[in-house]
Length: 286
Image (cartoon, one colour):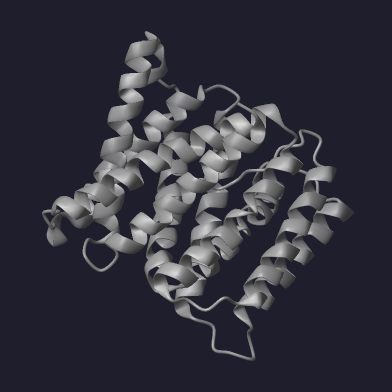
């Protein structure tokens, strides 16, 4: 399977996950959605590890870093899912493109990665893109937009932690502990607002849980087959895709400013890629 097909799988998975979150919004709390997502994903990952007969993947000597990573990842997921119920779908996806740029800044601060001229230019393009989308001074900035930006920062911290964990941990171990740690967090925060899902809600919960894994799997495979710049560019296509979904199914307005702002962020991300020795850039798979 070539990189284009893997990316199609990733884009469809991310779009379905967003639609599932939108359909469940207002019916089931975001915390309960995240709890069920962790349950479904944990079952699938456990079965994969058991079937592969690599039970050593269940253990880790870096539990503290796993906990830090997943607290911030949980914050990122909560903000992203909450934003999907409050903002146009394209707006949420566009602000999500700030994740690589926040990661650049955080990695420079905590991993002592150097800030080059190209990286500085990349950040400036990213900030400009955000300002075009939020339109401060022209319109009142919606609190929901700030929530999504905070979510992007949460994802960025988790990406930096993942970068460190990848030196010693298998990707399945990282995913296993992600679900194992986030499951009780979601349960604790939703126990007072528990809702018994109906059949339709179970369907959407299943879609959210499965697509969370398939998105990560597809994009990871695409990154193995192609230059990161190609993958990042193809990943950008999910913005117009989800914008069309929003227009057709949710009567959302098509905003050129969102596409323009996200395009500037994409350009900044590509500049950052060229300045990276490892030629890798995190893509949020939520």
